[in-house]
Image (spheres, one colour):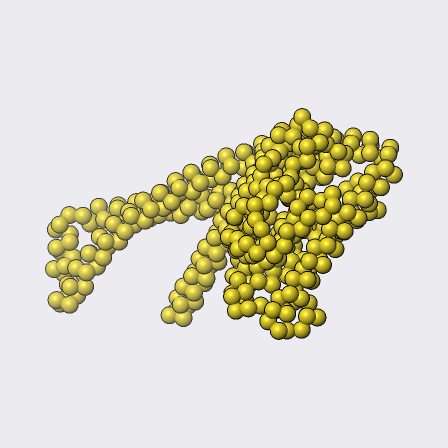
Length: 409
């Protein structure tokens, strides 16, 4: 008998823990989705603001296609997340409806039991019945036990009354929660419809522009290849500077100059360690903006036979925006090339961050900089109004995806 009771208790506890963990995981997932939803909404807002700001400027077809592709991607992600959130809410609503049904049944049974108890209590309510019940005891011990029973029975009545109150409040709270969830779901569905219309509009505009571009595809392909050659030339120059900086750092501490990694002083090791410990938490290199082109090799949005090799990210920002250091470091180099806007390279131990396409530079080679310190103003193209910062991050000469390092990129 004791074993059965123990087994029952264990099953009950395990069941409770499973239900609790499921509820917590549902809640955590809902928070994650809501956080992601807010990020995407902010990103769309940034895109729309920058579009409005540059509305009077005549953008190139290449820039417009990049804009369309990025916004279509963000809108698609927003629809995906709102669908996930709506589905999760549906599951939570169903779960709450079941809880309400179970609670109502439980409450009904509790009330029936309580009513039966009150009737029974009423029938033996008079004081004489209780006294007779005690006086009819065989001995003092039995009389004491009967007195205890009367007290326990009375306490049990009170407890049952409290349990009914608690269950009624719990039922009311779940009902309120259910109504809120149903309202949230309605809002998500309404938002989804608006986003779907916006996505359809963007896709139609994208198709019209692509149809126009295809008529002169050879000309656009030549432009794309020329841009990639220019980007590759700058990347090679930056690579040379990094290699030269590695040789210089190794020579400084008396190590072989053929090494492909920085020889670090004790101070630089601490800086590099701090930089790594902040992976995923580094601030953006501009205060406001969105990534228009991501890191890595990817198909070109216009000519799918061509690939874009991106060693960093392109961040669209507002006119007059300042580039800022993403972490403490030292200005390793300021690069000025023919027909290329100034480039600032900052070293963080054996890591480097590079800020390209600047109009003004506020720092000099050898300057120590702090996190979020403004290092220059981002160049705004006068012909199309675009303000684009090209940002790269590398460990020695090996580039890494900035999205893995920058907070919510």
